[in-house]
Amino acid sequence: MSTQAQKVDMWFDPACPFAWITSRWLLEASKVRDIDVTWNIMSLAHLNKDREVDAAHAEAFAKSWGTVRLVAAVTEKHGNAAVIALYNALGDRIHLKKEQMSDDLLAAALAGAGLPADLLADAADESWNLPMIASHERAISMVGNDVGTPVVAIGDAAFFGPVISPAPKGEEAGKLWDGFVLCVQTPGFFELKRARKVGPRFS
Image 1 (cartoon, helix red, strand yellow):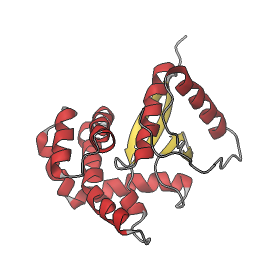
Image 2: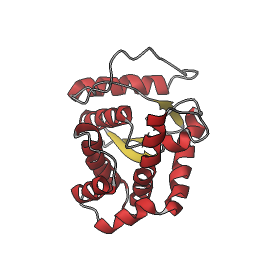
Image 3: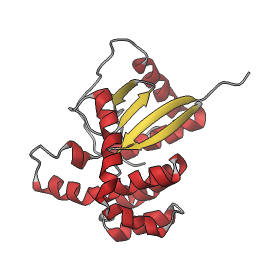
């Protein structure tokens, strides 16, 4: 008897290294567990728009708007498979190759994802702020304002995280998934946290 894949939602900002690592974990877990991930956009720039941040973060947030608009446009025009293809291409350039955010980076990521080059215009089109913000606010409504990316949800239950560095591989990724599911499905479970002692590790 066949079973239906477990539906999972993840929200990410392409600029966030820890969201990138969590996405790598989910891709690994999906190889050893029957899960089906929908990839959703959120924005650290939007999240922090009314907060005081240092100059480096302010500059990074300002440059990130085009990226999240582009993901919102790809979501609507091309669907979930195209979103993860674009996220893969963006993350490779942003986090692994350490390229600076620019139109050239976005154009190269679109090409790497096999998506039309003319989508680059959507990165500058502020009308895409609206669906991006709607996606963002859906995540925040589930977890609260005092968190960031990543957000992972099973059904109506969502958590910030898990924040991991590096992402586990193979069956170890599956075991972490099993533990995450247990936490999500436990009534009254809210938080499990410790200080990070390492930065983002991508391998």
